[in-house]
Length: 274
Image (cartoon, rainbow, N blue to C red; front, top):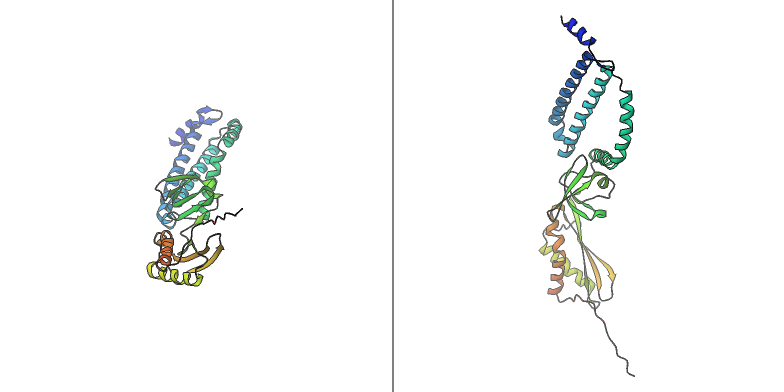
């Protein structure tokens, strides 16, 4: 009886050689494909998702799911026996038009895939993109764009293509960072003495500064009004706000307390006698 029913379905032609039986078989294939895609996505999220960054696991899950759906659709079209040649030609022309229109979308999608594979930075890292003047915390890398929370509290969205092709400076990838500052002293002052009092005050007031590597002091420039000394100190990366913003303040305090002059630009005007 079942065979007779299937035989009857095979005799019912819908259009262009497409029978009701082949359509039923194709529908079953698509249904099974959807079930398999969902099952694999769930298994991937359960067993492999925790090993990957949250955004990468989410995007890979989407790629696996839709990849299986596409394969199921191709199998469906091959079992129906329907002639898709005309549709493929029209679809090809339409695809070319859409391709030009969505070139940036495709570029962002491919760049997003490469970002998830290469992983130059990860969610939660503090990053800097010099070309875009963007510094902040990486929130996530999605299918088409990257979101960065800037230090002023705003969130900026960057297309994946621009992010992937930019120079990215990671401020969180190493356990220690170096902060720098520049301060000038008068030409009449003793350079070694000035360095000594600044080093002493840094050790006393800035507990987050590492003694190994020890702070460095370099004569950076003999400027018009001052001898400019560059100060370089190392500290744990998470303590930047305890070091970077106050380094100049501590150096100035040390010089002021020891009577070492910090000059400002001056000009000598000489009037010639006639």
